[in-house]
Length: 246
Length: 246
Image (cartoon, rainbow over all chains, first blue to last red; front, side, top):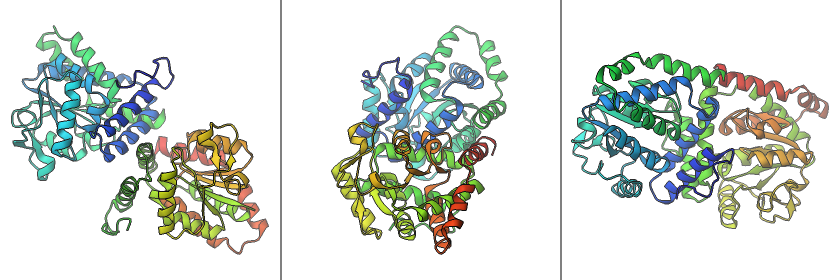
């Protein structure tokens, strides 16, 4: 599934695959109308970025991988678009870093959560959090605040790809190390992140997995050096410069 | 309808109204999944433009209004997003310029066409073309090529807001004067236009209507001077510069 009919040699392979997956997400009831609009915004920013991973995004992916490997309790937050676009890629990153996967929806319904869990399981996820919802993120209205007490609520490092700005800011306020994947370097999500990865989800997740695998045997000092040498402000500026000036 | 619950004083009034209308379009079965993604792309470009009408877009709206007033047979092409976002605005521009309205869908189904016709009628449209489909645009595959023989096929000036690149290029190939509204100045639609209006549909259509009303009593020489003095290449460059350099 997920588009085997699109040959990899097709010049728009990545773009067509993305479209196919997001439309499947709608058909499966896991991607929302807002999710489709958000997908379009991402496409425009990716187009302006040149539809490739810029050097600072690659550095960010490496720093994010190091953060996940250093974490006591890393969690990958998965929303409807992430589940539709990159279910297998999210599962592989979780495996490479020992992270939990937690479903976290802006438009939360029990039905959508269950469909997403099913979709993630179809792609190899074994233990999916997000259904208990017995924890809260302070500073958000009730429906938006729900998380699992033994998931995001108690995580020290959280990867939030394609996250809403309010929630990204609230998570950062909790003192968590926040890793954000967002194609808009001017977004509040990107700006509130410890590590903003300004890249397409479908390039960033496999890149992070590869970096995590390459760093699997690294000692803490090496990982900490990678984390320390990453400059979030400079990465955001470089991405905005690429978008603005090509 | 179309969002009376959103007060005009709200700082994101225009953006929220747009969201409301496009979601209503989905609920009514007139906006497609592709339409939602396209809406998101437009949002990103509008954000980079500063969400306002830049001077060259204002000049383009004036030149487009002059073209419509000079035309023997002007037609406004309306797709699912235009019908959802600006049904009343499209009807008022048609009235101000004596243009026909023709429904023209990338994903054409008889059911969607009828729903869109109903929606346009609810907003005051009297005579809506696009159901006969007895004409063809050369150079496009069959489903994409369908137009009315007494509509777009025989028009000398066509306004195609938010048009797909293939069809915009094919219409330009037919030698028609093509007026395009598109927030991406690098798109093939914008680049194939006689007059590219790089602006938000909800700003551009009322602006064109106001310009047409102001020019209602102008003589042909005045209108022709407006048309001649518009420089499409310069307008596209100015828009791209605004997007790239803020």
